[in-house]
Length: 237
Image (cartoon, rainbow, N blue to C red; front, side, top):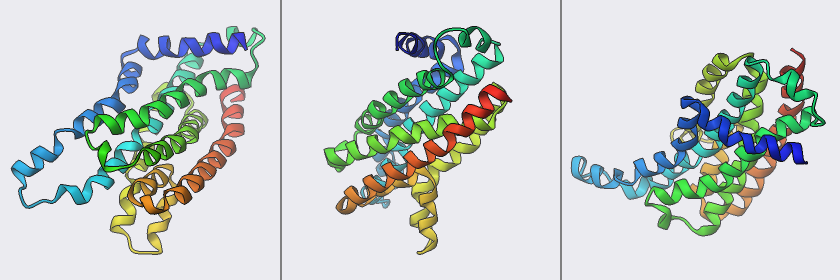
């Protein structure tokens, strides 16, 4: 446990040491702040546009960023350690391979848990949703973060590939929009992507309990399925 805490403590140092990592660390709250002036700008330049009807959709897309970006960050830190040939030195410690991965996942998951409601609050539109809705979105973000980190670590062989794969995975953030533009039953295909569950929680508060439980279970299964694959790819290939 001591070694896990030590490596987990290095997460913030690793994130702040390189500019691209530091940027990812602070992007989610900045996205929330970026939405704050949006209603006023739309009212000024598009006076006929009713922004209030679209607030849940904007918040749904925004709420997906913390899990995605912090998971992306965790995978880049893991890939960077391998690029720098740090694994041989780390693996001679009593820390297990599972502990090494967990030491990067746990800080990222905690950041997503706290960062999701913070990002929503900074948007200035938090009054549009209930506290339970924000909590439900944050809970789904936790296993979603693990999934993003593990899938990025499994697919990429180095940090450069990790950045490219992370950019492609960013397309998942548009999943909450699909139910709006696709007719049923095709709209339910969006639920293949973790952000869509957060989107359902925010856009359908009357059924948020159902979507929250479903999203938590689904993203947890995704994380567990990618765990073994990431372990194999990271340490043996």
